[in-house]
Amino acid sequence: MTIAVTGATGNLGRLTVDALLERGVAPSDIVALVRTPAKAADLAERGVQVRAADYDDKQSYVDALAGVDRLVLVSSSTVGQRLAQHTNVIEAAKQAGVGYIAYTSILDAQDSPLALAAEHKATESVLIESGIPFTLLRNGWYWENYTSDLEQTIEHGVLIGASNDGKIAAAARVDFAEAAAVVASTEGHEGRTYELGGDERLTKAQLAEAISAVGGKPVVYRNLSEADYTAALVGVGLPEGFAKILADSDAGAGKGGLDTDSGDLQKLIGRSSTPVAEVLAAAR
Image 1: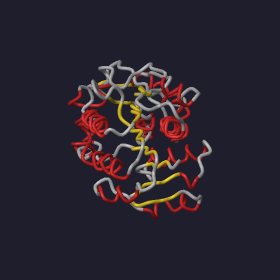
Image 2: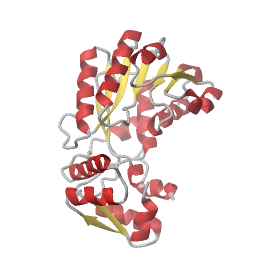
Image 3: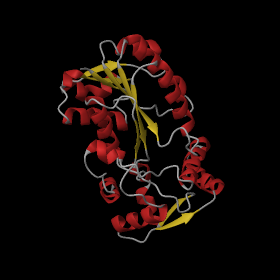
Image 4: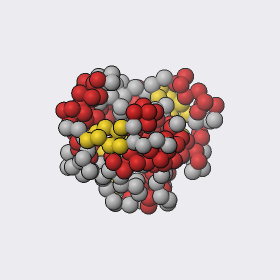
């Protein structure tokens, strides 16, 4: 059984390939689909099949998916172009005869208050209409989303956001990657939808406390309006479009959009999710 993973040099894709290897899948049975094969040279050295494929080039995926039985479609990171890109991959998979797709969607995609969910919702519809057996891996937030500016947060003693007291059931990327690897390499998941979230369902105020504990300095949470949070993000150098997406997602968390107590992630990986303290400590 040959398992392919899209975006295999990206954060989640690379971890998914690693998780498949750790689960004992033979390297020769794994196909790493990448835009730039040179960036996956280390995977090729380990015996993984590395094939060039571009989300924007449907034919490249038709060619790269030849002989593939199962596909992990890791969602593209290009917001605004995801639906077209995902449709290319799904149509290519059908043309290539792929028998199964596991797609990394977003929590409660069909009813999510997050603007980010729109392309995931539409992709799920394309997948259903394709007729290819599938599993929906509706991933929650990554704790790593809060580590890129961790040192600045600790230095200034303030974590800002617009989520009020909404809970965020995040987990580490490695947890979601392991779940994808489990689903791709075992039977019994076809037609299933998994709402994936971590054990720790924290408000941003509680996250600030966790950051304070790791940083050894007091950190407090300051709640802003969505508009003010957007402005603050633009003020530290983020592009306005990206800032709006982040602020919308944070406001969506305040409406329950990033919370779940399904337990699906824990059941799939057979353990608790990685503690936020561990993710924060590793980022320092």
